[in-house]
Image (cartoon, rainbow, N blue to C red; front, side, top):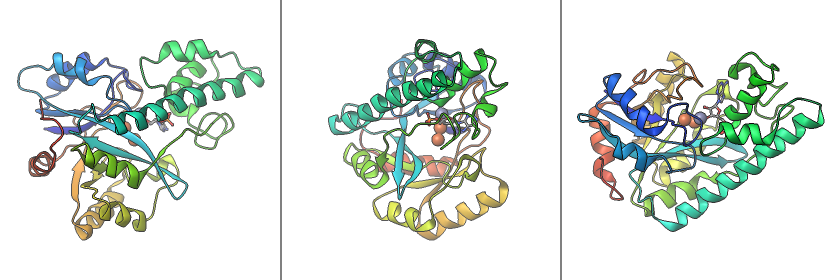
Length: 277
Ligand code: AMP
Ligand code: ZN
Ligand code: FE
Ligand code: FE
């Protein structure tokens, strides 16, 4: 079982990287990728804690944009010391801090009982909207994380939402490639999360060197998976599948969706940044 998309406390997952590796082994995975939002900060801890029989694909999920639409790019096996990529990711992480503070300011201005210190304390690394959502739950303002991702709260373009800096996706693909990595477009058609890009953008990404599309993802209904699989086939892209595990921050379980071993082999063959551990 191969699961190529998970989050730890280095971003908005709830398990620390070491515990995530143990949970991945217990779930019966043979290969797991750690893909925290805009950071590689959890990879060393995961590598040290790697149990026998489990392989680690080092990666990240990069916050990108194209044509005014937000999208997520999974990057694997790139050299995590490649400075131009680190610099770019650090800018995104800094802007995430500023935008989360801005969201708290908007909440406080309306008299809601949340503080930046509380949100920052709840985040072990890259701060994200789930951390703001947790503060809303603690303040008794919403009942669940899901309820916070609505127009009345911090849903995209919602009342207390603020934009973060994102990287043009063609630039991100190019940076990862120069760093020896490979890329997969994460949940390309997860319409439940907001606007998605058209096939024209996927074609541009393929021309820029994109390696694959995440076909099987918890946020893709069956009919969507068939469409995305067909799009991948037409463009000669690999078809991946993953859980996008976030611990208790989301319902998905490890190995809920998986990637074919032949697809993993192809990704590994194409990469030259770092080894699978
Ligand atoms: P951010 O990257 O800070 O804008 O926050 C987006 C993160 O929130 C993503 O990692 C998603 O996994 C998570 N997210 C988005 N929509 C939802 C939702 N409806 N329920 C729970 N988590 C969500
Ligand atoms: Zn997330
Ligand atoms: Fe994502
Ligand atoms: Fe994710």
